Image 1 (tube, rainbow over the protein chains, first blue to last red):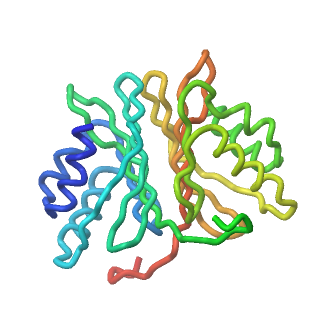
Image 2: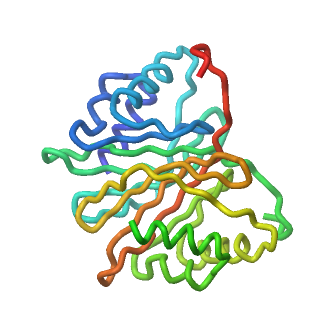
Image 3: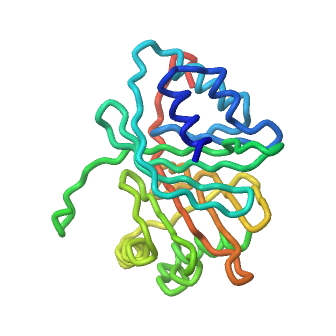
Length: 120
Length: 120
């Protein structure tokens, strides 16, 4: 899914303009960064990306997605990111707005490896 | 949104049958529990709920949602859970399947309070 690739490309290029371009304008957007509370609205969300992408030592991200689930004008992409060797479980939601797939929600959360009783 | 309330009711009642009822059957489902990797498919997801709901000391959950975003047959509910005094940021996605709103994705991640330079 091109929109999802554009998101990770913008992240890795530290390209705030490209990141701003791919988030929805009319539809309310939300974003949950690892270990942080939910951000609500385009201003708050883009302010967080400005801080993240503006960091000169921000590590690159690698993403492995499950096949997207598309329901009409909504696409859900979930999968596994790796940032600086930390695995992150991610949920990305896109909605078609003015004919373009735009992001309305990103949720990333660190995966802490735990041995359970089954040894997994 | 009734389906979202049913999810938290099933959690708090530790009612696995009600939990199984509200997850989609035909559509692929996924679930990301706090600090865990993504679970894929109804069997894996329900197995995790069996373990969680079967735990006699599982604390109750409180949920405060933002207004749901509805796009045709898809509903996105994001908000803040509190479990045993731990704040959790949550993303819930529902899709209408056979005329019923059914959950296709849940993502919960702990919020670690951090003082940033702005004192927030």
